[in-house]
Each structure stands twice: as structure tokens, then as C-alpha cells.
Amino acid sequence: MKVRLPVRKAILERRTYEVPAEDRFGKIRLDFNENTSGCGKAARQAVAKLSAKKLAMYPEYERATKKLAQYFGVRAEEIALTNGGDDALRVFFDTFVEPGSHILICEPTFPMYRYYAEIAGARVKALRYSATMEFPLKEALAALREKPRVLFLANPNNPTGTLVAKQAIAKLLRAAAETVVVLDEAYSEFSGESVVPWIRRYPQLFVAKTFSKAAGLAGLRLGAVLAQRDSLALVRRALPPYPVNVAALAAGAAAVEDKKTLSSYVREVKRLRAWFARELEKRGARVFASAGNFLLVDLGESGPALFRKLQQCGIMVREKSDLGKGFARITIGSEPELKKLLRLMPRTV
Image (cartoon, rainbow, N blue to C red; front, side, top):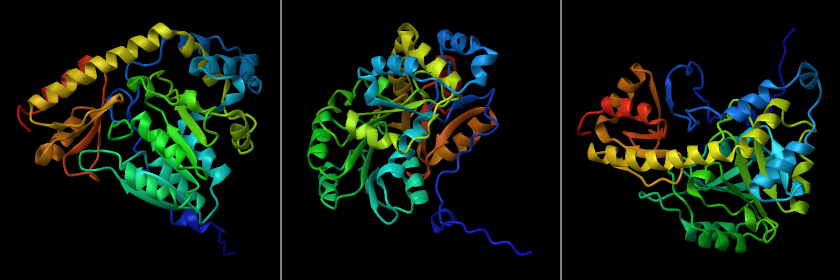
């Protein structure tokens, strides 16, 4: 019997974002912008307290949702929990994007926007950040006149680390009367900037959040979408009935109540980010200003050789050869981790 599976054309043509995520444990992981210190004690204890009966039950969301909503400064009906930040993005395609319609992004940026667009059979209009990694506001405003289904904007942006000013975001929102505007705030704890308070002012505004970065819960997969109640009700129609597991719910609720651990980690990342940027610049690297928990660095011609050397020594960084031969995105890990990396760098790159 000859079998031919009826695979969608969009799946056969999908080409982006295969994550090299294996064999990383025990290494210095400065490649995926994780919290390399690990989650806080309160989150670990919350997971450890889950009983066998609790694990055997389908999750209940009300208690955790209220705590997470309070953390973000919204009402419970203005937050929808998701299976990680990636699913917080996927749901916009399920809700708003028809095959053949188009979305608007500005690259370089998080590859999952294009990834989900390819799966949905949507077209992608991609603007470009400038050579100095400035957001092309004028071009974005013009592109919104074409009425894309969704505009995705990571703020701070990954991998550039750049932050689009609130004044510019307001202009985009005013120009997007027929476009869903998704602000991906995966790194907002490190920038100190957020447009969450605007969700009641702009029905087309949705804010995507993750607990994989500052809270250190990447392994448990917990994300959220914040929006005006009526707008979010449309998104809920595309969500499964049990999108988040009980361990993620318990750890997430505990993490946001442990404000001391969260604020201490964010403070340390900011300190090390500034220090590490100076140390890299002393060695001749070109460092882009960042509002995230990472730096985009141009190491020039010596970059590829250094990346191989780091890999051999168990230090992982994210090469960004799509931006240039010596580009890499480097997570702000602990001070000992960063010092070990610096020891392996030549005095002048």
C-alpha cells in the first residue's frame, strides 16, 4: 500500500527556527537569554508541595490567575495564561490571521513571529532595523496603511536589545485602527518600561509576557496575554481549556509573590550588563546598547574563531551570522560566568 499524507503546503514550505536546544545542561548557557542563576526558592518549594492527587487532577486557574493579574496590575479578566511565551504569540495567528493575509514585523527580531506566519500560510512584510539598530518608525506607519492583520513588536527587541519609545508606540497604535498590535514584553523587567496600563485605552493592543526570563521558569513554560476584556475574549476562543500545567501555575504564583528575589536578580543583571559592555568595549568589540538581559555584540573578523573556542570550553553564545560575520547575542549570566568568557577573549578583537 502506497501512503501519501495530505500535508498542508504551508508546513512543507516552512523553513525557519530550528532551535539547537540539546546537550546544554552543565555548560555556561549564555545563548538563550535564560536566568542562569535558576528560579527562586519560593518557586521550587511551590512545585515540591504538589501532591500526587494534585498532579492527577486537571488544573484550576482562578487562584494563580488572580495573583499573576495583580503582579501585572490588571484585572483577572484582562489576563489569559498560556503554555509559555511562544504560545502567547501563536494564539494571535489562531485568532486573527487568515491564510494569504499578512503580518508586519521589523527584523532582526524574535524568529517565532515569522515561524508562526509560515505555519499559518500568511505573508510576512518585514521592515529592517537600521545599521545602528534604530526602529524604522516612518516606514512602519506607512506599512500600517496596508492594514496587516497583526503588527508584532518586541520591546525590548531580541536580538538588538533596543527599546522603542512610548511616544513612537502611541503613534503606531493610533495608525493601527484595523490591525492587532502585539507588544512582546518578554524582557520588560530589565527595561523598566511597559505599556500594560494602556490596554484599556487601546482595544487593538495586546501585551505578551513570559516567565522564562526574569522569573527563571523557562523549563515550566508559562506565559500570558494581557488585553482589554472584550478583546481578550476573542483570543480565549482560540485557547485550549487547560493551556497551563499545575506545576507552572504553582511556580508562577510563588515567583511573583517572591518580589525580593525577582528585584534582586533584575538589579544584578542591569549592573552586570553595564559592566560587561564596558569590558567588551575595552577589548575592541562593538557593543549595542541593550534594555534586555543580553547584549548584541560585533566581534568582527575574529568572531567566528572565538565562538568556536568558547564552544570547546563549554561556553555557549548565540551566533548571529545573519547580521554579520562576527555578531553574537550574549546573555548576561552570573559574574563568574561572564568573567570566564572574558578570560578566553583576546585583549583586542
